[in-house]
Length: 261
Ligand SMILES: NC(=O)c1ccc[n+]([C@@H]2O[C@H](COP(=O)([O-])OP(=O)(O)OC[C@H]3O[C@@H](n4cnc5c(N)ncnc54)[C@H](O)[C@@H]3O)[C@@H](O)[C@H]2O)c1
Image (cartoon, rainbow, N blue to C red; front, side):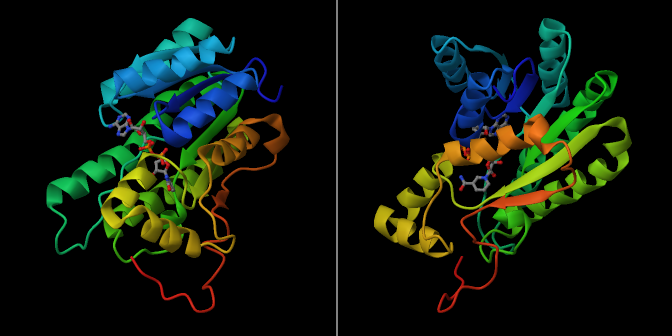
């Protein structure tokens, strides 16, 4: 098992990529602590892991609230006496032109997508350093590597996650703390459900898959595989990396593809 004996905190573990990662972490031997705002969803992930014989617990967490994030981290350390890994995963998308997006939506997107990562790192780092090292994996997006016309606010928050990651990797490498960021392309989750609702399923799938070189939408489990790898000792030489798992979406402009929002 690739994560045997490790203790991991995962934010947004109640659905999508966070849920798939929590389940795979547990299968790989990690003891998992899930922070999620939605109680039912967080507890459902825990129940799923425990039913498989894994070890998991849930702490109700709004990642925009410093005291919640601190409690999430501290409760993991209190129960397991250490922390090895933090996956800052919770995120939202509020699309729309800068002309239309209200200031409150800007503030909330930044709080959920970027400030939450800062808070998670702030409270986890002392424990990772005391532990002799550890790993932080942040969830950005392909929108943290390239612009998207209808997602300026989301892009700004996700570029911020990349910058935070790289800077932290430089400073905390000597303390044996590895900090990496994943940049998924389209992934099956609540976000794709919302996209299909807004655009119609067939049109959405054609557009979104068509923007990737591999012409596909990934499963959350495929993204979880990358997170497990980065959390494992197999990635011991990797830090400060922004790694796409996007079917080639950010590799360059595809022939004949007119970029759309
Ligand atoms: N699905 C995609 O296509 C895609 C692509 C690139 C990046 N991402 C990123 O992946 C991450 C996970 O998203 P997902 O695709 O699994 O969607 P999702 O909506 O299924 O998961 C997001 C999770 O974050 C939680 N969350 C939201 N706000 C929160 C808050 N304030 N406090 C605590 N938890 C909160 C939600 O409850 C949910 O469990 C996000 O950061 C997203 O930006 C997703």
